[in-house]
Length: 291
Image (cartoon, rainbow, N blue to C red):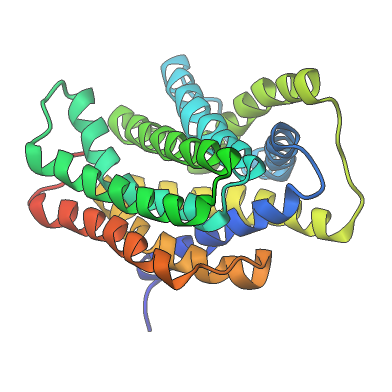
């Protein structure tokens, strides 16, 4: 019988891939920054009882600052860009597709943190990923400017995700994962709630579909998914997370059909394959984990 740690990458893949389509459903009833604020506020509420029940101690200020940086890039930057991109018209599938570029960006970000110049082969891997994404965007855009802008937000989202993961790994924080995640969400909520209500006003819905979608984003993505990801990051290298990410486009596209009613046209499949090939190329030419 496989151990829990063996199942973690596959559990993460399922929870993470479904998040794009579920967010698309939630955005039918609210605005992107409101959804972001509700998600982080809900995550704080969900984790607070655990923090007190386990009597977790507040970490040192240096660790808190690093967690705030991770919260800014990985939480606010990544998910904020995803939700804005989806609202602008990008599909859940294209948002998942950009996740295939994450293995390359992880290695590039890690190299930049170490002040090293990434190799030509790594840049080539990124170019292949972006070319594949460009293919799919061109097929699905159909003259819609909003779709292109939304797709660009998808790229910014994966940049934020990559930087956040590198910060998490490089700092080597000696913080309980629940406490670390709770501090990130506390900071993310403190930033997103006032910004969302100031810019968009308050947009809440009592529709069952919205409540279910928000519940999944809070529990499935924000609590279970994020903690599974941090578990992989802290137990091994970023390469483990990056390796599983190349499967997100395929799984995300499959789940977007029953959840959000999105169907990927066959003519877009070569672009998806090229994007995932770019990620696999990067994994192949990288003999040792670089982050």
